[in-house]
Image (tube, rainbow, N blue to C red; front, side, top):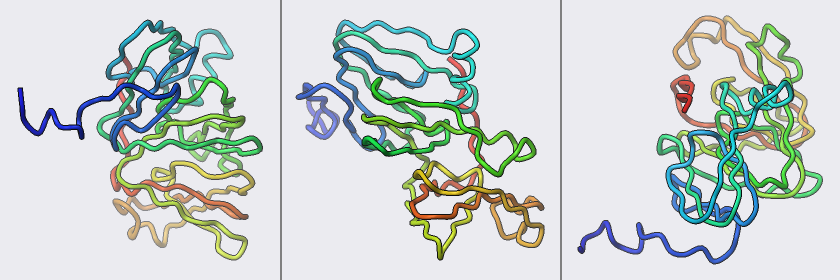
Length: 225
């Protein structure tokens, strides 16, 4: 058969090295040689000798399931082979986490990551229980982290001179060392997305960066699989 569908743009080529790569703007490929972790329901295809194990059993596991956001559990992928991951045709990105880095990410944006990375649950400081239960994933160590984002993300520098206010539904993640707090305002509620009355923004202060998604709609929680 012939046609644009079978062009090199769409045809998968053999992996040249183990690990995570961006297959295209909507999909991440992971050449597995050992173990990696991914969000359950995110794998769209695989080949090779791979085994899959649901994570998140037991008390500690249930807490780690919460960290990946919106009630999404993780799965471990082990063996030798290739797997492809995506989520509702959202844009995919790979972040290199290096020793000493700490990257806080909203769980809905986590797609997959190297088993060499450590992650923990963190309550967003300053949010409190009344902040809607703002729990995020904090990744440390060394390895690659695959993220998804609705639309093309904005990476906004944060400085002591210029704190950044971010809609809590739009924030993807931020770098280590930033102080966080919640700011509520009735006066600008009508100017924010939807004009819902009380506006709640996450305020980030310090030196670093924050990643924001441009989507205007409140994200729906992905379906459990």
